[in-house]
Length: 222
Image 1 (tube, rainbow, N blue to C red):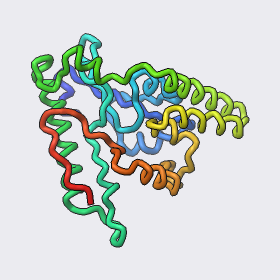
Image 2 (image 1 turned 120 degrees about the vertical axis):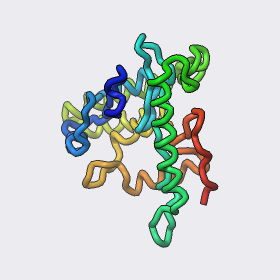
Image 3 (image 1 turned 90 degrees about the vertical axis):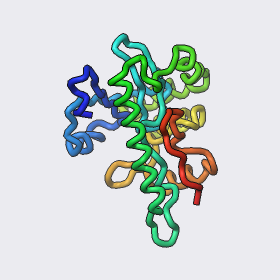
Image 4 (image 1 turned 30 degrees about the horizontal axis):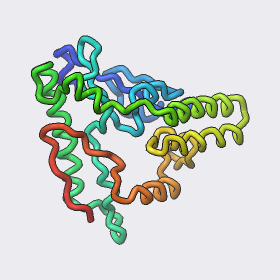
């Protein structure tokens, strides 16, 4: 979003990577011109109700949240892979680009029009979209951080138990689940366990479409 840099607009990216050094190659490859932070203990996820990435939160110049956590221009095109060719159908690839474009256009409109933008939520609507306080979710984040402490202390088995308990308490959180999941060589938790967990979603979304004006309707599920 360099094009908006002169409009008092700043992107602050936060990586939810717990392992030291885990996001560094990705950050270096992206060469971002905006601040990038690494939230090892998922404090941001806990406070703002983030369960997956990429997620965006819109905060205005007064520090008020005008759009709570929502999927930031991503679409689950990978869920439509042809089982024979392993290719993603063209209509889903096209839709992925349309979703990204629509979300970026919404941000541009907000930056240009401020509180007059149609994408800015009222205080009441913003509160309604913020996840309600849930004791189970609070305990999940506490056990997640306990697991991190145990892992850093060398007690990997006890840490695994805490991570798994945290994931059971907050099953919607892919961010918590990834902590103890098996990783591919590139560090991404996209192995068989991920595929099984994804299949278990059924008709539920991995990336719930954001409720925002101008977002195109997704192609029919294949």
